[in-house]
Image 1 (cartoon, rainbow, N blue to C red):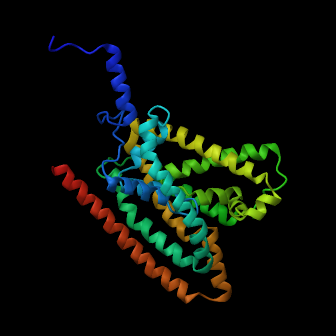
Image 2: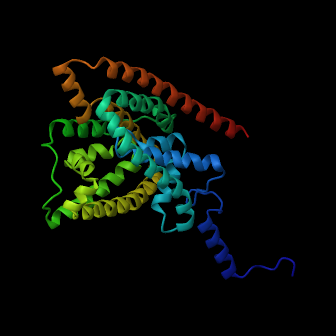
Length: 337
């Protein structure tokens, strides 16, 4: 027969293959997360770069970059469904992971050194970039009804990063040690890793600020040294626990966000817009920058650092906003086709 039907088992196998390769049709339940070309692949790597950088630099949000690139929903979906569509999700996430590793290493070895030399310059650049990119986040609620619950979510989002910044600046008692730890400490490190994972998928939350709030940021940064590992090899277990919590957090919280967005995406984004705006404010006020202000008050303002910071702030705003405008025009042109 010319129109002979395929066996049911063969049809199911083909559907499963489509799911695995990411070639299935686009739908709300099964979005197309495959990169279309090398340019899309590079955008994924650049997104990962900012995610890695965000672990080191307070106030920088990799998720905000994901929103600009229109990869945020795909990122959340891929993380939350990595076991359900393993091959397709891994292909999408791999360039992001590679970029994140590069961003983290650059942040650890270069940005931290620059922060020690010209802290306000670094802050000015990244603050400008985050402010310039903010319209892209705000676009997500453009045209949406503004009511009291959504207004409260926006205010809550605004206050959360500001509250964390104030707490880490005035409420912490210095760095906590990584030596002579008890069993329960390792459970805490798993939980810290989980919370850090949340900061990577929720725009406006800072991994650095969270680690500072727990009192472990400087301790962990200072522990990444071969001589320290020889003296305190149990710190490797600390790293393992944090990575374990981080991976669990990425998968489970992304799945939760995916479910929330499916039911109330617009409402959820009022909280996210507040978080993003609050994180910009914290770039100018956190424990690292407060130390700069204190030093300036005692020893005088570093004119070079201040002037470079202001110049790069303007540069960051302009460059980021021009990129947002470019993305808007690109999407508008695509919608007309």
